Length: 83
Image (cartoon, rainbow, N blue to C red):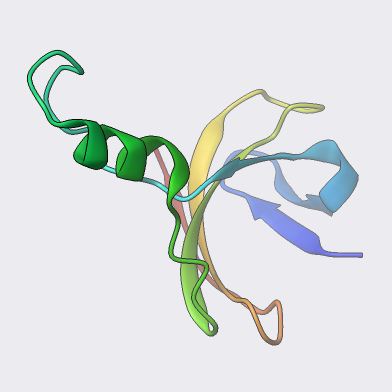
């Protein structure tokens, strides 16, 4: 089981959290960008091996969203940042 460090509540077990995907910068309004760019924003993710930034919500705790950088190979947490 993954132990996640909530910036507000401290270390908790993974089942208390909801994974929110990769943080992505939203392109302009959907009516002003092309289909390929909008599709990329909605569906395409890097899923890199190694250091990776992820959005997490402490859904069974404080309900706050934060960004966690972790190594996808070892699952070691590198950094946790309040959002």
